[in-house]
Length: 226
Image 1 (spheres, rainbow, N blue to C red):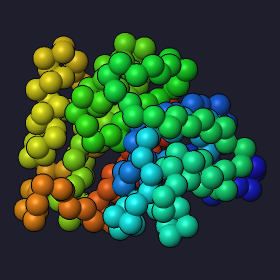
Image 2 (tube, rainbow, N blue to C red):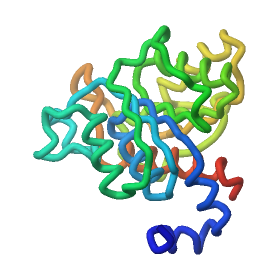
Image 3 (cartoon, rainbow, N blue to C red):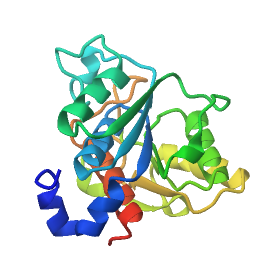
């Protein structure tokens, strides 16, 4: 364990590593964003991860989803993610929730120290944020990464400061209507590329960068480092 986190300890300090080993983080959505968040959280030493998704890997996931490989096609994302985490950090406690999260889905938000929202569906995102807030658990939410080319355009800030992103526009309105303010989000001011159809396009790098930023913010907040 000491050698595993030696390089991270040189940056964050020994106290931060010790703190992360005791923390529990739930990640909702294991797609192009969520998988990279999970990877980074595991490699940083978060002691327990809750992984929530209902999907299976398909060939269309291969361009951007870290746990999507030829060998995982057709497999549940939660199961493949758990195997990956335990291959990287065998001591991590991994609980998987193979389910479609809806506003009325039963889930114990209070058992976690931090919630990561990497979902696409607005109703699910609103429910995750609202229920995390009600449970007194910090939450960070990712806005749209589809049809984006430039990962350097990603930013972190409160939802009220977002612009350009169509998903963020809807979330601002709906969160305001619910009296929820100051939600930390990852978003991009890059104008979306015009897609060729109703399905958003994606790149290997923007969702990945967003997932890594999500994980970095979680680690920073849980260890109180800057």
